[in-house]
Length: 215
Image 1: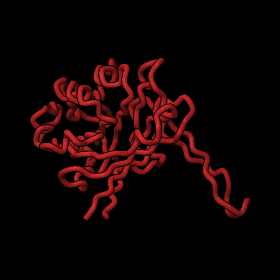
Image 2: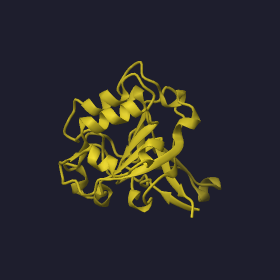
Image 3: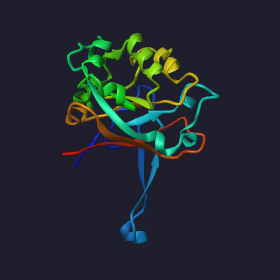
Image 4: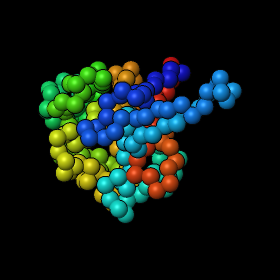
């Protein structure tokens, strides 16, 4: 079995959504003074590789802690959209290229190749986004979640968040952002897990996303 880490490392100088505070990691215990090391961590629930719960957008939406643990594991397939140009639309053409695997998947993960820009100013650029047909397909198919290797399901400049609102309205689905290494997952179905912190009344959480692939 091969395990692929799909998660960016949390650090003080990591990219964050424009206007958000960077994570702060402060010493809370040291080997010299306390006999152990501990770190005080202060950060947004939407930093780095993270997931949005419906409560991120809607006051009556389901919170992270209300979702069962089973919601965070399942079969996934990577939609290869690396051929979509900067600022372009990811369409059903890319989704259909996955074949029958899409019908058996719990999660659709979109590989635009944008994670190669992580840590550079270009990461905040005009990344590809799914179009309305793809979003309608995701909603109708009732996936457990969708995932992206970019800053958001909406363009970074669109503060009205139309895709967030349409996806998360009235349904238990998670939106996973800032994934990486999706190119290592191959074609076809694989086992996937994306595990958030169980935060009381949580609107989202940083998470550890992994794929495990037989053979």
